Amino acid sequence: MPSPDGLLVVDKPAGWTSHDVVGRARRVCGTQKVGHAGTLDPMATGVLVLGIGRATRLLTFLVGCDKDYSATVRLGQSTSTDDAEGEVTAAAGTEGVSRAAVSAAVAELTGDLQQVPSAVSAIKVDGRRAYHRVRAGEDVELPSRPVTVSRFEVLAARDAEVDGVPVLDLDVEVTVSSGTYVRALARDLGAALGVGGHLTGLRRTRVGAFTLDQAHALEGLGDGGDPESVPVTPLTDAARAQFAVRELSSEEAVAVGYGQRVESAVPGRTDPVAAFAPDGRLMALLDESGPKARSHVVFAPAGS
Image 1 (tube, rainbow, N blue to C red):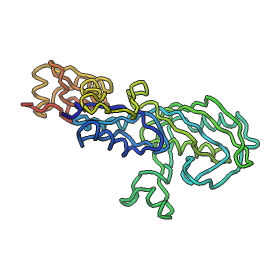
Image 2: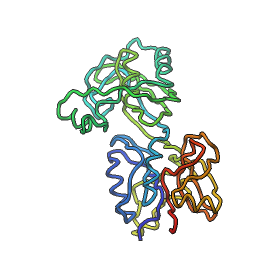
Image 3: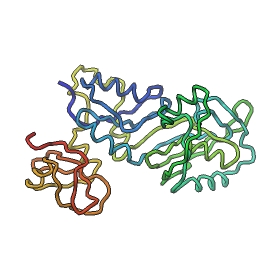
């Protein structure tokens, strides 16, 4: 038997692509129906939320959640990828850059911003990923997009020297909206200071309600050979953890199961609402933005 429907929170190791992790999960969970809620670069580590079985239908709503990262930003060097995996394209150094200037630049990169994503990204340009175009030697210019950096905190700063050039390494923590590139934050911080910057380390510590405390190491995952032993958070528990909850009456549960609209419990709320039947089944994710709630997705159709 395959693993039960639900979410599997993995602590992705460095060197693995998100696709690699999905492939491993498909093998250990005994099902092809596995997806993830937001890519992590190969060099990055940390929280990667996987949907198993019917829980893949939750992933659309998890991708848009805000996220926490811890990272190390190196000021004084720019790279072709805005991270340590790229080639150094400039090394201005950080001589004369004060801590006060760094703090002021960080403050300017906090709040609602228009961010130009890194050119080496998975964004599609005329049907092809931007990173494929860059690696083929094309010049790629991506349009800016609105993002929110609700927290950008410098925890530590260390002076160092790389190839005879003084650099400044910053250990930072950020809370960002979906679609924010932390690599681009490092790039833009360096640009604001006139010295260039890139990431040397990145660890995602939270996606929505799911944190590193709930994440499982890939090593040893599924070694028992029993997919049902994989530590999957059941679909109902995952929905209760992440979304606002609405307890339906028996009549409402039947209506929702048929895809019918019901009265909104809190008209005007824009976030998805997990709707549960009296017997505890997750019936649907509801949109209660209007006076009548409609289903984003139904998990327990009538007759199931």
